Structure formats: C-alpha cells, structure tokens
Length: 334
Image (tube, rainbow, N blue to C red; front, side, top):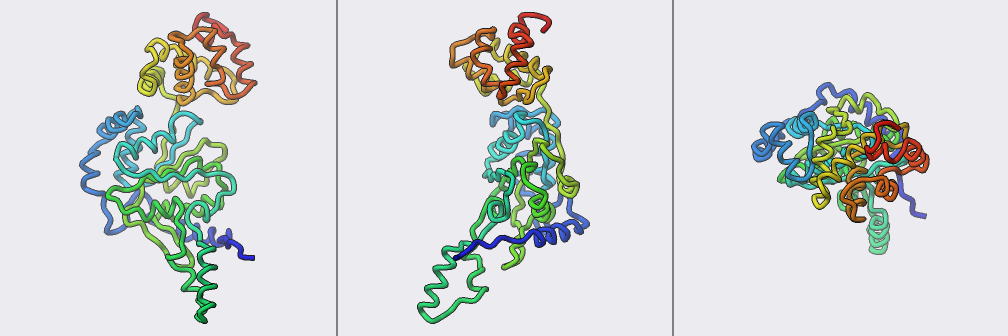
C-alpha cells in the first residue's frame, strides 16, 4: 500500500531550534530584497493606509492602521489577538484589497500539519512515474522522485513563492487552534521568510509576504512565535466607530437602527455571556432587522432576531432575564 509520508515532529523541532538561534530575525527583508518602490509610495504613512483601508470597506482606528503600516513597511509578521468577531480576519482581507494584491489564507485547526499547510509530495504521480520507468527498464532514484516536479504547493509555500508585483498577504487564521509543533514549524517562515523542504533544500521568498496571524486566545502562544511578530490587540470598537462600520456595511438600513443596535450590543457585552457580540454579529443583527422590515429596534424586533447576535441558549436566557426593554434602551435598569 502506498502511504503518505509525514515529516516527523523531531524534524520540525530541529527546524525550530535553528530558527531560534538566528540573531537578527525581527522585521527585516532578506539581504538584497527591498520594499517595492510603488508600494512605499502608495502608503507613505499610517494615515494614508487608514484611508485606503476605509476605501476598501474596513474602518480602522489609528492604532490598527499603524500596526498594519509597520508590518508592511518593515516586512515583519503581525499578530492580531482579540475576541472573536472584532475584525481580525477582516483586517487581513482589507489590507490585501487596499493594496491590490493577492490574499493567501491558511485556516488553522487542531491537527493541522505541514502537508496541509506548506507542501506535500504528489504521491500518485510519483507512483505512476515509478511504474512507467520500471516498464521501460529505467528505475528512478530518490533524486528523480523528490524534485520540484512532484511538489504540491500549499498556502505557506505559495506565499513564499509569490512573485508579485506586490507581496502577497499571508493570513494564518486562528493560529491558537493549531498545536505547538505547528507553531515551531512556522518559526523559520516568520524569521527567515523561507521554508525548508528536507529533500530539496531551503526555498527563500523572492518577495516576502505580508504575514498576518490571528488568535482568539483559546490558548497561549509560545514566546518564540510572539518574539518574531509585531503585536496588536483588537478590542471592540467604540460606539461611534461601530455605527460607522454598520452604516458602511449595511447602507440600506436606517441610521437610527444602526445606532440603536450598536448601543444594544454594547449593553449585552456588560452581561455575563459565554460569547459577547462582536462587530460581525452587530452587522448580522442589523441585516436581519432590515430584511424583516424593522426601521427601529424594539423588544419585538429584538426577540425575533436574538439568534443573529447571541449564539448560545444560555446567553439568550441571560439577555431575556435582564429584560428586553433594557437591552433596547427603553428602561434605565435591568
């Protein structure tokens, strides 16, 4: 039986050790590689990047725009942490849209490995090549079989080999869902903008990707990974910014509805909920109310659409217990 061969964890750990010994890893493009001149001209400062992001439908605050600006201009990975729904993934998508470059996304999950994230060998094609060579009396060696012709690119390797004209945006989404061995494998990519394939050597990025990692903090990430990244915590936006975001995403909804829903979500976040509503849920909530014909938020509309904003039965019970009139702002106390 022809089996897929996985790289052992010991080899991943060895790669992590080599990367950890690099003395000059943070925030530098490799020797001979510079930021494309047109990109440097396009975003000369954080304020300009903020306007570009706003033009793509994402409204950042000054801190977020500055963090993204530094990540692009320094060539250093950026780690976003924050509660689910505050816009971490959307920020990576927005920077790709704003710069007019490709977005390469790797969705992490428990058990993800190198074959799914970086590369794997095309075993069916290798097996076919072996049989054809044997049929012609010309057996193939390991060097023939483990060459670039049989290498299948996954998201990380595609980002490293992206040729431009602008760097790709590499989104490593929900890194906290992966295990520590996978974190160790990422160190070489984050520190050296390269991926080592044991059979053929190290593949270095010609144009290092703009790497953005997101985490919901379901577990703590290793210090070795955090040291290689810029860091920015994305909190729930202030009320005025939430209203602006909702108005941008759901322009057909009334301004009063957007303001009332944003304020109601802020009140819900003061309750003891398993999952507090983020900006994404607020947008979904306004869309649901609008499609149902509500122009104002009241207890009837809230009761009909609670499933758009609260995703646990226990949270719904907490909200109902606090009083639907209080949630929509019709009474001063719960």
